[in-house]
Image (cartoon, rainbow over all chains, first blue to last red; front, top):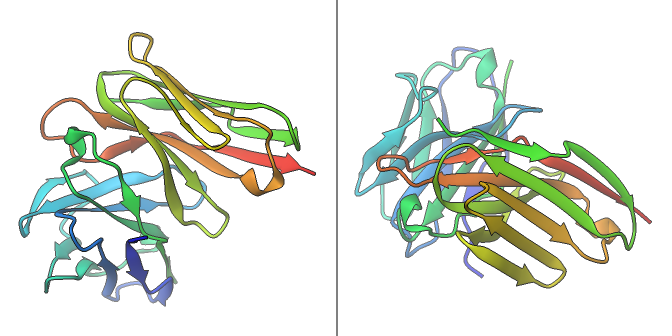
Length: 116
Length: 111
């Protein structure tokens, strides 16, 4: 069964460092998403991406965040200068159609980011 | 802004019991997702529904659009069903790609 793959599964980084979280969406999907879940809190939408550009972003997704699809398979989330409050589980998701078309969501296993 | 509320927050039951988890939302949606999150953190999609009822094995999901309410039922619950169950709403308005998540229901099924 096709799946969304995320690497690494766990990353520890020092405050102020840049991190790149990687995702390989399902191959025929065109819409990509990043979500985060701070420990003990609910999952929150960060950004959606389609046709090589951001289609929507939340208030959380400030200038410290960026997304990129550097090649035909990877979808990355970069945090330029990490803060302690960036510590969270980050989920990548992909779908065939945009969310408003009632399409099923496929999530990766998540990357647990710990900023120390 | 759509708010998604789940109840109960925590639920402990005995193996074999019938489980119901509730979800309500505040504004119109195009679809409601039920997701399962295991202790390791990964999220698995269980159902996506916009009307009526869906069944998969021992899991049943229902939605009442008029009442803005959905339920997830587990029949003949088993310890392996222990997980966090999350409902998430897809907005029906334009320009809203992201899902809005509830806080989740932490379910423990004891043998």
